[in-house]
Image 1 (cartoon, helix red, strand yellow):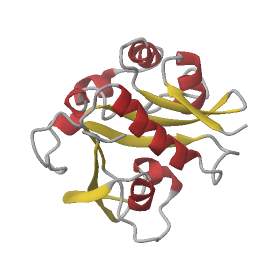
Image 2: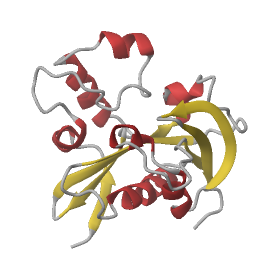
Image 3: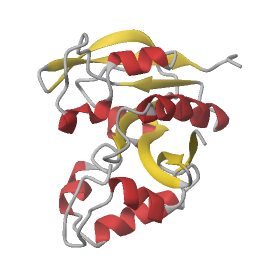
Amino acid sequence: MGIEIRPADVYADVRAVIGPKRPESNVCFCLSYRIGSAENTRLREPERSERVRGLCAEDPPPGVLAYLDGEPVGWAAVHPRAGTSFARNRKIPHIDDLDVWSLWCFRVRPGHRGAGVVHALATGAVEFARANGAPAIEGYPVDNTGESVHQTMAYVGTRSVFERAGFSWAADTDSVLAGFRRVVMRLDLRGAP
């Protein structure tokens, strides 16, 4: 069976991929770009998990999950930019006033890396955004020109991942992650099949 992409509306599956491994641990839980900075700093477990549980119950849910043989193995955060901190980020420019969606985080569980999960997630995120009426979708990956990106900083994706999913370069940014400049990659979904 191949990789299947589904909306991230099952909290237990989201937790299995991006949640804390120990109940007392505080992890990003992909909230850093999704909620305000003050709330993100203040939230600790178990409130952090409850915040994510609430997002999973929203329409649309906070992203997509990759499943392999029914097991959740990957995550991608994708949501309307207006509902993220990218709406007010000074280092990542807005190309225009279109109500674009943002794709900003990938996570693949150990043991499943290198199996095409990130590429499936990128394509699935595009389809998810399209199905929810997005006119365009953007990502803000590092432009690493083929150089290795440390695993802890690879969560934003690489330019080549986005290019393979049909995105094109749209702008440079003032944001740097792991020594690599981030770029705005964009895919127009208006009139797309």
